[in-house]
Structures are given as C-alpha cells and as structure tokens.
Image (cartoon, rainbow, N blue to C red; front, side):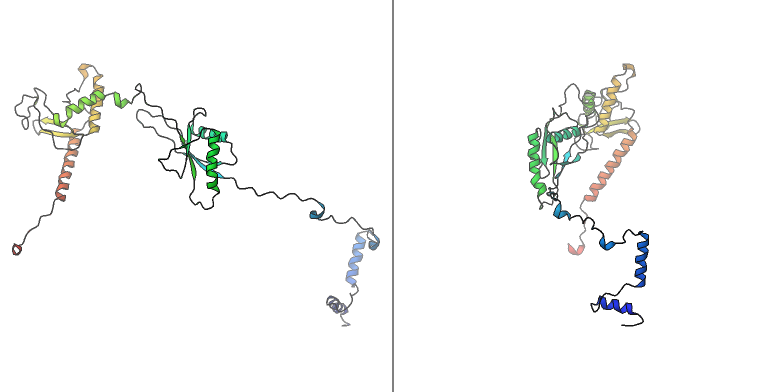
Length: 336
C-alpha cells in the first residue's frame, strides 16, 4: 500500500476482491455529520428503528388482472352510389339528373331501416312510395336489379357484399348502385311541348310551299323566263341542285337585274319561318306581312348572307370533287 495515498489503493483492492472494505474518509464523515445536523437527530439511531411498511406486492401477484379484450374484426365499409333527384322537364330543356352521391356505409353498424331512410332522403322520394333496387359493380348492364324495399332485402344485400369485402385476394374495388325502379310519369296530351303544337300547321305549310320538288310560281307573278316558259304563273319547275339530303327546301329570289336565284334553306330556317308565320297570323289582316304561299320571307332573314354562304359551300364542294378525280397521265411517243 502506498503510504502517500492509502485510500486509493485500498478502494481498488476492495473492488477487485483482494482486500477488506476501507474505512470511511474524512469527507464521507463530514457529509454524514452534515446530514445528521440537518435532520435534527431524527435518524440518530438508524440501526434500531422499527422497520417501516413493506413495499406493495407486484400487481400480477396480489391483484386480479383485467381480461384482455378480444380482437374485434374491422367494420366493413361499403360505397353506395345513390342517384340524385330527377329535374323536371320543361318546354325547352330535357330531363336531367343530379350526379350520383357516394355514401360510405358501415354494413355492420347500420340498421336496415336507417339505410333505407338515408337512400330515400338522398333521392328525395318518400319511404312509402319508394321502389328501390340495387346492382353490384360486377353486374352487367343487361342484368336485372335486385329488389331493395324491405329490411330483409337490405340484409340479403349486405350478406352478398360481406364475403367480398373480407376477401384478401380481391383487387378491384366494389360498390353498390341503388336504382329507382318506379317508372317516370308519362307525358299527357294535355301538357305537350310548345314546339310540338304551337306552330305545327304553319311548319307543314312552309315545308310544302318551299319544297324544291313542288316549287310553283303563283299566278300573275314574275314570269319564269329561264325555266317555266311564258309568264302565266302556276308552272312547275325542276328542283334545284344547290343542296342535297332529305331536308331540301329553297326560296327563289327574283329580280330584273340578276334574274332568279335559289337560296337553300335548312330545317332551322324553315322552322324559324314557320314560327314567324304563326306570330304574323295573330296580327290583324291589314298588318300581316307573310302569307301561306311563302312569297315573302321574314325580315330576320339576311338572304344576301345566306346566298353567299351557299355559294361558298357549293364552290368548296366542286373543288373537293376536282381534287378526288384521278390524275391525268400522258404516254410518251416511244411507248406507243
């Protein structure tokens, strides 16, 4: 042992198991005395104090354990596509429908009556008048929908989707599509479209008067010198070839400078002519501008522009035909 530092080597020998525990140092004694002074002698006889209460026993020995909750299967979520309410058809628009709404339904936690109530509320129909059906996303379009009116129908539908949702091999997403099986209200004769009855008679009159195949000059009118012969009127002439197709109507413009010219008319122009004729008939006789023979055209028509467009269309048609013709070829004299 080193006489200059006996404590250091004594502690080393004790830690290595080669000697007894060394006596406390002066520093350790000073710390003990300071703690004794601060405690005011409460622990003067530490070795003779009565033992305190023991530690509480471990929980897994003295106390009953709570049961481990059993693992519950996850709730199955099914996407349900619900169509929106149909928009009433008006005189100018067709019946449309709101895009379908996707509802995420937990088939394990929802009551069948609650499910039906949600579907009917989304479609804005009454529960008592509802005639619902459903189809799976795997069904074909030609497959008939299954009924979805009672609680048993809802349970049967959920039972159909449950094994599919639990399957781990499935990669394609599946959903339910609800359908309103109630037939839409049929149109009655009392409320037809405005365009079907308002000027139907006038439309037939205008079509017959402007048809190219039955064009005739009224009596005592401008003489058809280029087609019909003498100016006696009422003479039929051949149909014009300005335009083709089923809807072939035209209006013949007559003046002394340019002669007669045929202005092709389509279904849109003929329908507009009929509407103007219908509106003109509501006026007094002395204020009417149009007649059933269609000798005068409505003021909304710009015949100069219409004639120009028809001429350009005819010119393009001729150029197109020339471009499709077979190219000419020449034979050299040596090849003859």
